Length: 257
Picture 1 (cartoon, rainbow, N blue to C red):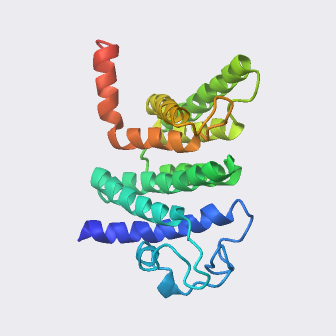
Picture 2: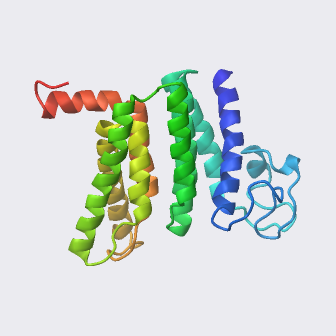
Picture 3: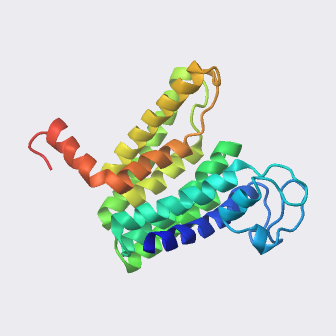
């Protein structure tokens, strides 16, 4: 029952995240107007706006204009609900849960906006970093030395990759938004985990690009939004970071822990 309640709570949050994903790139207020169909503009009453349930009962179409509702709305609500439950299973109802679940909510918004627009908005990164700093001041989840070093390590490593990509490909291969995102992730994960999380993010991106290239859906000169892959890498270390680090030290750096 606890998990069901948490999933429902996460799905409600996911519904709001969908609002952010749609409205932030269009510079529309997150408060007004109320929910409306992106196709016909009709106001959506609450009984057609129940997270997950409404999409299923409406069969993925607007009740008024019958145009398809983007599948992204359903995916975000379900994903947010599931990740809320998984984060609770990992941390319980502790400060770490709130610290990381808010990070995850922001990363969902950042990732889906990056997929749609290839942009990472500074204001989202600023709000996320502000939350992390203030929360850590009152309830320390990440030791300050790890957080501060992680911030600079994440940003510096990504800046190095951006410079290397520009040198190799003679063009911008990574935006400054990716660099700033890596820095903020470093604050939340610490320097050890953020470096490996970014590395895993690159691995996920390479696998995805290889799949798309083989299927004929991508070409070498195309830009691949990195925020979703850095998000996957970060989630890997939010949930399994200590175990992965322990394995890494044991097998690759003998005598260290």
